[in-house]
Image 1 (cartoon, rainbow, N blue to C red):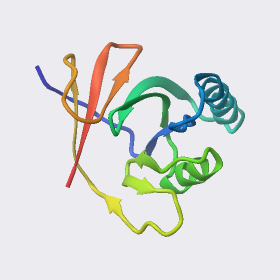
Image 2 (image 1 turned 45 degrees about the vertical axis):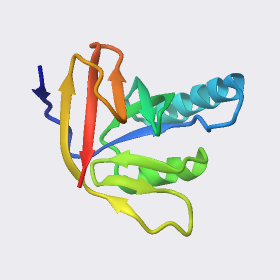
Image 3 (image 1 turned 30 degrees about the horizontal axis):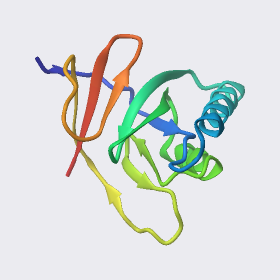
Image 4 (image 1 turned 135 degrees about the vertical axis):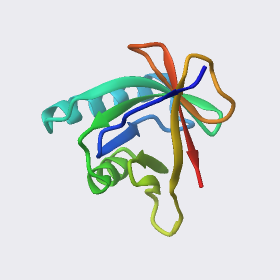
Length: 129
């Protein structure tokens, strides 16, 4: 079963976890990200994300510009941030942006990168051009 999803005009998927960090360090970074988002006035939904084969705790943030998402990506030492404008590389010296081809929801875990929307038990799958 595949469901189409109506997305807000501006959104971002942001994590504070860093591959190679301890579970404790990633947990504290995720807590700090949540606090920072709340302090800055964003409503953030916790999600479980699979990026490059690694599970990580992230936040889906509505009404966030791509520029603000990049700022958070730099602040939390991320490689990329996923936004309404596409997957944006955060690290200096990388000049690659992937445009979004499609966004879908499914109750079944898809292959590749995906995000589990914890509040509703559905998987978000974003495909790039």
